[in-house]
Length: 530
Image (cartoon, rainbow, N blue to C red; front, side, top):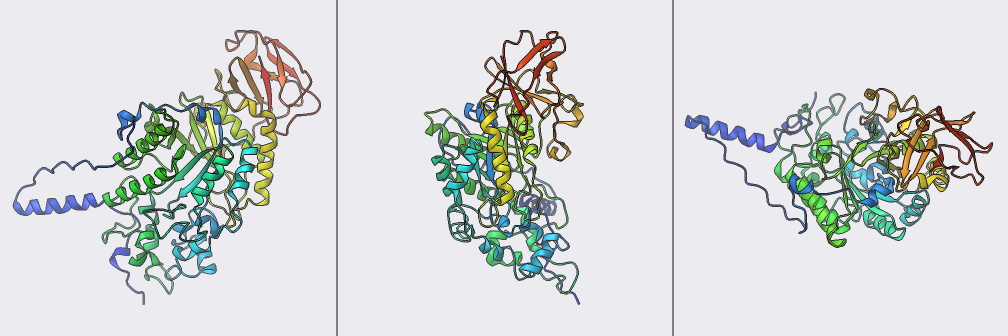
């Protein structure tokens, strides 16, 4: 016989408290025989740092992308926390409560059933025993990163700093018992890297509701998981009793107390660490709350830089970034053509959270991605997922070393460059627009060949990346003497990484370059053209 579950456990997603309040008002009004017009809700008061920006869309449109970010092009990210400590892939904290999921089966086998052994019991197993931020950031700088991003809090609600508003579930109080964000920031400053933090907190209210569910079948069907225990509501959330299970959730809606908690917690993060970049996993959440967070970030940064704001906020919603405000982030995707505004791809060499079973991107795939993105006016922020220990594994080191070798030769064609008139030429570059420019489109990518060329510029210099080593002379068709893209004759051509001169000709077919027998690098080669 199944044990009947409590009414509070019958759903996954939540209805906003505001909707419930409106229902109550309608019921009261119906009893009185009329429905009064609802009074306008008072605007919430949110305290932010004083400065040139207000927490309004109109004010934030005055923000401009700082030059350091436009010049940087490449950042590295540590998307790391207790879920990585399990070393079994993405969204472990949520999926371990979904009966039938691979991570649920793993959790039951390794840790125990989530009615008794929940995510709260997994967190202390993340020890970061070999975590050396100084060593890691030294490697990342050598590999060419110009900024570094530390995850600060994921959807699991565990803070990686000494959090004022999450005092029990943070990395100083539990697990590593160390200020991870602070340690990373100190290392970034030592290695002269711009410092970024990522926050993924807003969706947690709905995302983590699986912890309040129960098995649907088996001997423990109907027995609530540990998320219902009020002793752990500060981790799993105190969900309302009439939470509508089974309905699709809008992460942009949540009770007002959660919105305020989100605001205070992320403001605490920004106030304490004053990052150069704040990555939010989503858009500007909860309107005035999110807008106030952006303004607070920018005002604090402007104070540090004599009134000039050099901080960056990223959003994944195009309308947020149409005019000023922030940088548009394309998760695991590449923008089509050349967007007018600088943008960013965030992606990973494997899974977001460390997974011992993951298959990593090849070094060529990463280099192709970087060059393609930079040619289109973008930046690449690349995650190297750290395991429980905090130390890169062997395969990750191989990839990082290959990036390091390539950057040592070709970085001048990456850093501080701007797009040319077109981003590239070749079968992929000239494919129909419908095949380009969507989020999560990187899975459709194949390795680029010598038929593909990508362009960047710096002053009067044009760089042409040939995306593979050609078996015949390299032909840059857009530089034909008859092309409208090339009004002036080429004066000189160099091959980066090759000390001797290369032979070249320019005619109506294009710029033809005779390459040496020995290639300077294993991936995209860069021609410097003036």
